[in-house]
Image 1 (cartoon, one colour):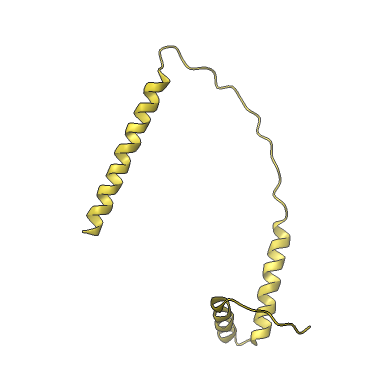
Image 2: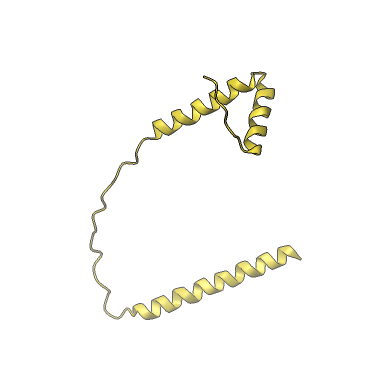
Length: 93
């Protein structure tokens, strides 16, 4: 079947390069590439759904202050962010 399609410039270059490397005609490379893409799409199929059952992990232990734990987690995250920025700045110098 003859048809006209518009290809992105980069895709056209990639296909032409593939045809040149393989020694195959451009038309054959285009057909093989389309066939491979369509086959991969079909074989991927639908993702299976799954159901997660919630499980109780118990409550907060007596004496544990969740607000304090969250403040600690925020402080640790801030320290790590500052360390990453320092490392990034040192690399740029």
